Length: 337
Image (cartoon, rainbow, N blue to C red):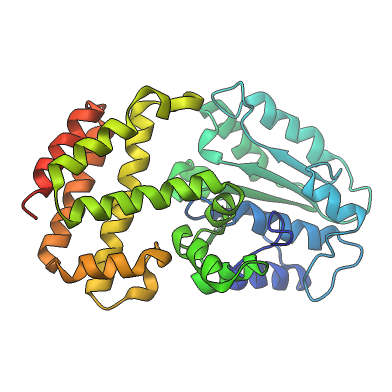
């Protein structure tokens, strides 16, 4: 896998839209880049800003080697201001936004565009949001704003109205596979399918063998539980997953429970997709044989009920229900399905 941290995967229509606006000198003064987590919103903005400043661009592709490209990647380019919540703060503060005023009043050293990028705009507190609104109401010449968030509704309506919305969607698995040219096709497909249309998730799984292995084990265990012998297998599973030594690294029992249910819902979804004749859409590509056998033993209404029970369990955990009791109740609910 090469340059996965800087390579843009998917979103060609949005990328082309920005480049056409640049070439036609019709860039909007502010864009809201939104879409699910880990699909490449920040990567898309970085890629565009690299092209904006690259000294050796080719067909709207940055060279990734020149000083400007490297500075964009390292968040150190003098014509770009990156803002995000400080790790020791709860919000993006008004002081951070006020600092934009000095930045926007300066002239680009290269005589080109200047850019402001604000990541996770839902972290803007009320005062910071109002201060940003004033900046956007009187945009400086030659400055383009990129506001990045997972949901458009997270942003104040008055701020949203000042931006052109760029909605990014999930990336086809076939495109994510291209990230992993050094792997065999089955390994690459497995990573791409488990990512669920999110290149960032695929990269995280690739870089963390333990995470990938844990997801695989959780999926296999749930398939065994659904295959039969519910109570005994379920109790063995709970004793293994929630004993103290499995919670190293500061992971709480609640977090562990949520991560398990997420995988289980993906497994149930895969079983349903196979039952519906859509095996190409499943997450756990390398478990297709086991999933197919399970799908053949379950009716569609039964699989839908399994999905519903897992969703109910997730909602209980979101309401701070006892994790162990929630899983045991889930086991009882699944026994007759």
